[in-house]
Length: 131
Image 1: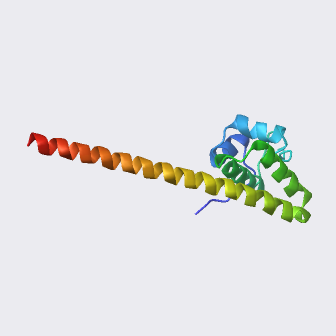
Image 2: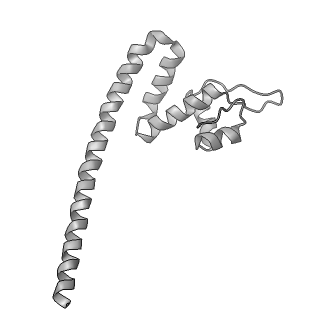
Image 3: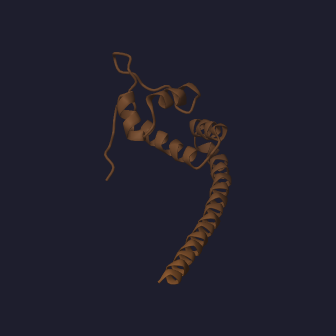
């Protein structure tokens, strides 16, 4: 069960999202995040909505979505629901890329499995030869 996080410091936000403090500041600087709210002392405070967005953007990065596409996606979010079609199209295109990557990884995994089985067969033949 995921805990609800509200008004987290930048260090807490980094821990919760798995990113570094530097990356969070960078995301804000390049426009992936709207300016983060500040406490009375001027320190950043991340809302649950911002944490959720950061985690989503992190997933897009982990799947290889180019930063420029993520920036465009965030811009569309900021423009509101009238951009739902563009967001869907962007994600559909990225989904195809991810599916292609998965298929390539599956093919590579089959090759690895074949090689493992081949080496296992060779080892068994060698054991029989020496017994």
